[in-house]
Image (tube, rainbow, N blue to C red):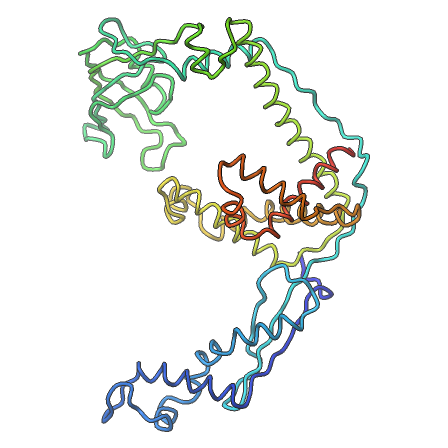
Amino acid sequence: MAKNAENTEKIKIKVEGTEWEKALDKSFKKNVKERKVDGFRKGAIPKDMYIKKFGIESLYMDAVDEVLNDAYEKAFEKKKVEPQIQPSMDVTEINEKSVTLEFTFIGKPEVKLGEYKNLKLKKEKATVTDEEIQHEIEHLRMQFAEIREKESGVVEDGDTASIDFKGEIDGKELDGGSGANYPLEIGSHTFIPGFEEGVLGMKVGEEKDLHLKFPDDYKADLAGKEVVFHVKLNEIKTKILPEIDKEFFEDLGYDKVTNEEELKKEVKNVLMTQKEKDIDDAFLEKILEEISKNMEVEIPDEIIDEEIHRMIHQLEDQLKMQGLTLKQYYEFTGTSHEDLHKNMEPEAIKRIKYRYLIEEVANVEKIDVTEEEAEKDAEEMAKNYGISKEELVNAYGSMEILKYDAKMRKTLKFLQENN
């Protein structure tokens, strides 16, 4: 992608005279506190002596910071393009008399839409099979299963085995390869292949050695190595599935359901609703993908970089929720910031294209959202999230952003209805 000169605007702001003198003076008062000169108390050096010893150039950086906000506001008032990202700033000229700051504003690139209506794309039809309904009912039963201790019998698939285990390689204890009263759910595939299979059939109090091998694609220091796990079974817990009766229906929130056939109908409706949503989402993605092939747009590198940085921050927030840092993510995945940046670029370009595509369709079709529509939409969203409208507006940043979001959703609905 390249920078489109027509949508890039450079504005120079010159700061001179009293304004620049005041900025240099503030910079001096800040910097003199950090300087020490023999014969003077720290921070008590006269300005002329400070400049003679350290040079007036040492004041420039902080002086630029002093005038930056005002200069940016002046440049922002003069600009003609609608900036898509935070403008960059360069100092093009600086001396004791003045400073010239150049702000580069990158506007929205020109978008040329191709065909975007009546694309004759095929949309799948949602269907739900009896097998899917039965599978979902069993899944619901598992969620409400009662966990009981198994006083006799052996470990079976689906049971949770409380085990002590210790791994050894070549007679030496495996670092991090031991545990006490570890709750191993059979079927979870938590351990390496063969471990759970080895625990199957064990009785409480039984001990055995499992002779296994780490997979070839395991972490480098253990890949392909033979290992022996000494395992002792302390306890077996099993799941008792609920009966399909009135109590179960009430637990599910289906108060009006009285028998299994009615339950199947409710489950079918839920599955159908989800499938229809998934199909709608996939169809919309198909529409956007097809329209993006027909459109022409040159996206500046700076806009792509900004989107990638936004995506990296989103990933960082997700990792924090899991108690991880970005540094740990790089270590676990064997990647770097540069790798992540490169890998995210295609998705970033797609997101930007889709955004400009939707905006242009809204522009061509004159799709807009009134203040009343935006207010109503915000109230409905807040109700769905269980928060107040004010909290919703604060979360989004402003009512204008909510209005923009509503406009984009309205345009997407238009595209779905016309393809």
